[in-house]
Length: 203
Length: 108
Image 1: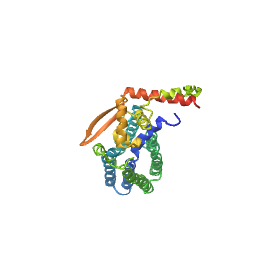
Image 2: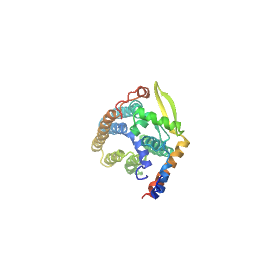
Image 3: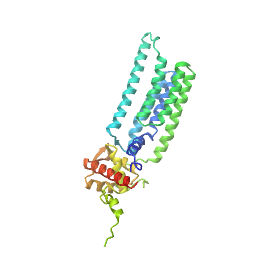
Image 4: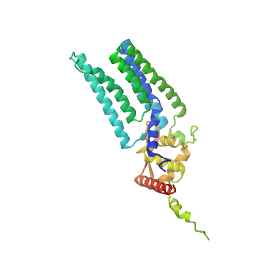
């Protein structure tokens, strides 16, 4: 029996269903792209693309994913893993913000290995997210992040900026493809329509 | 007159299986509900591949047996139904799982 049905796989399958919409990929794509364009142009692109990424993600989950997949309340174990990811991501953002503020206010941080800190921390957060969230594609994005972070810290622009732009185009393309496939695979349904006998082509 | 077959004794636990669960569709529903806290009707359709009619019929049987409970609500103007296993349903699924593991394990 255990060889036929692995309950952990059943749970993982339900969980990863929500990564099929490509919205995380589009969000990361716009984030990386914004970072790369900021280095080559100005901050406006970064703010615009990050805002677009957040909007696409939140509105997409609400108006595209939820009506098509329905909602699942996962087990406490799964919720705990998600909480760890949130705490670590928030911690990384706070560390980055503190360093940014210290640099802007003219503090002397020359004695600190900041380059190494970012090279380890940023891809590390992605690797942890990939592992804790069972989100396989994030391992690939962690590699892309590692490449442009290393270039950013040890080579500089414009090489790092172009690497980041290319790194942004990869998840953006993957996410767009996944979103189109998702829209074709899962038609929007609501229970009142289904109850009237329309099964939207489902078996 | 029934002929005694020693093999029957080995398979006897199969006769005692919970028939409410022991149907492919209901087993799929119970399995998916066992690994989460609760799921919307549409989510269950996607996870099991069952049509609205089939899922509705099987959920009614599971509800009659006291294995699932359903809660209806509205998101905006759209209705939704949340489905979850009851404590009895969770216990019944676990018992079924253990029974099947025992029987199939002995047949190895």
